[in-house]
Length: 350
Image 1 (spheres, helix red, strand yellow):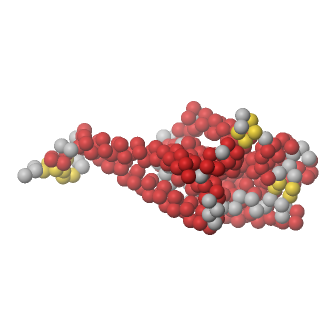
Image 2: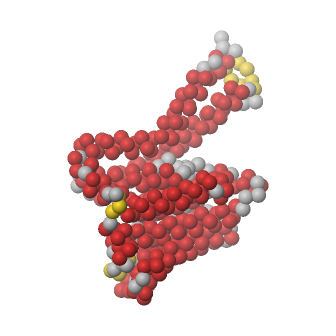
């Protein structure tokens, strides 16, 4: 008969404890597989689609995928920082549309490239600042409220400001080049993604603010007790998210050579999906830029493959939704396994 013993974790079975090392190894292996899962799925998906769809692997199609996902990837990186702090930014799609409209008006007024770019970036950052300041200093229970409000406000302003409430054609040549020019076979929009990712990587990995963001997302009260300026960090991540929407607006305006108040519809859902599909957690405190990039490319690959097979767009929406559900369930499983691993570690050291 197996004997029972009791420690700080409660009553345990010694016979089961003897299997601890095996259980630890299994849990660690499962956690590694979950961590590598999105990237592994992306690789297998690309290989599988290329095997059954010859047109998929053609360089021109791969370039189209990268160009089409560049806007999602840029905005998703800003969304990643917000989600890392247990927040959400529902305004990014409408913000992007407003940025393009303001940029289009700047182009009509000045005809210059720099005023157009600055107008888009400033508009995006301003909307982000409003989100952050109202959330923090308005003492709202969750950023869902203010970002949902600015989603509606920005879309309304974009429609009101656009002449005729419709698309404005034309962008300065350097901006239009983002949609038509390539460097080393890569669309210029992809190089913008790399530049943004590099800057955010430096900020999150090499600067103290990056550690502050992770700490705030992991435990806001503990971060406050450590002297971290929690309110400032929260405002900053929303400003960055808005700025990323502005950068995405520049890239999208370049690809389409236009500005429109209807741009960015459902972009907020795409960016949230990219972050979660990529492996980040809605619980905050866990995630990196690679999650947003992997998720964005996954969405682009899936949509492109379905387009090549002439699948209706509403079925594509169903497919993305199902993938989001699976990604959230994977996050729940990862949290369960991490808790189990902590218990097993505690038992091993007891």
